[in-house]
Image (cartoon, rainbow, N blue to C red; front, side, top):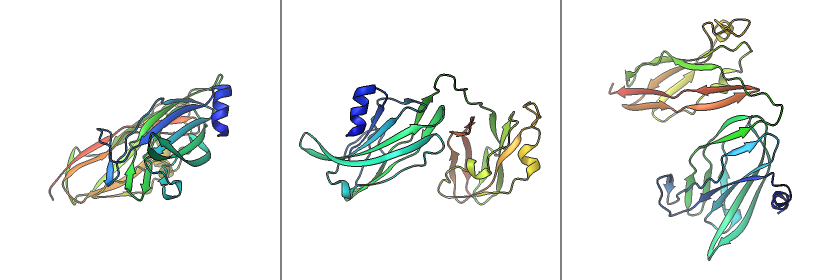
Length: 255
């Protein structure tokens, strides 16, 4: 393929292979139906503006019968192309699904799960983090302090709580609250609430001082059953501002 020849000539492409192996057991495996996924990562670094390739190796030989549901990549990565091709490892027929990206900004990009679907079943890859290095002369992303507020350590199923994600020390207009929305876990109702302009900028001083911090996101949480409610830590970037959102854990008791 043309991308492979470019790698040989310039050495600019960094390749990560995620091996998607059905009927293979591993601690990193997540399975649905009869399909299982094993993730093999050779490198987790890339550079701004330098093409970077990710390949899914699927243990199914007909590319037309392999479907992949990809996680969102913006704003860190631009997708240049997606290419599927058949192949073999020994006597085993496989399909390679190759993604060619161009990194747009330096920082840590959290890859979500790829969902792979074949006639044998479906499977998901485990999330992982890609570190993107800046090019010469590029400024490092600014990282304000981000905290959760209003979350109880414990609440009962059926109760209601208001959670607030607050950003300290940023003197720029914040992106819309939808930018910060997490993936909603099962067995909960998690609904965004309106954030006023005063709440979004409250306490942030004109020179970027900490102040009280502006509200980036406000949520209503209603757990439906006992267990552990968790929002995992995330890293997202808006323009040249990096938000390191901490994890949130709440114990849910019976209603």
